[in-house]
Image (cartoon, protein in one colour):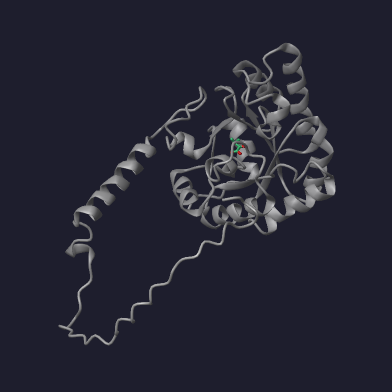
Length: 300
Ligand code: KIV
């Protein structure tokens, strides 16, 4: 097995390459596949709230759920560095809670580092978490936990003032101790300038080619949702089609009696003659049904 990826490997990749490849994973099966395929980083993203749980945002995701999914991914990762997302309200209330929750992701979830969204306003929190020996990956730009503050999922930092603020945030996060930074949904020239100013690696999503690495949500790159095709996503497969075709083939064979065939069935080693000893129960006497007239005060 190749050497495990650590925060030092990622720093070296910024300096001499190759580009960092990060992908989200939420369970052991996908984690195993991406690890075998050569992922440098597996992110247990709170995007699971949308792609796994079916919510409209990442906001309902809880710490217990992040721990559960982190455990599954960590068990399967052999080479990749595993990062666990800190969900909404797990680090915003106080630095103490942030340290405790980051600690849970590491000690219970088995991740190597945590990621949290936000700029300079979280510098103190990041200092506190790193002081507890937990590496922190920052995340600025389009930060999905701030969907209501942003007024939707919109590209950030297009104007000079906002772009300057983003560069200042990036520098503040590096100074606070972040070992890497996700840049999401920002113009490619801004991402390239931030990347050039920092000594920690940047990992882009919808932030152009000038970052030190790239990340995509695994269900997006695999083409699992035919209705979701934002500009920044490239589909490398059509798993929606493949999975649907396979499921339809299975259902057709079950309905047509072709599955299971002999090759997929077991045989007895002897001819067995069974004597039935399962007398059929007497049919229950007919009972007239009586309507109770509704429950819990709902009028019927
Ligand atoms: O939650 C997530 O999957 C993420 C990535 C898209 C960066 O934060």
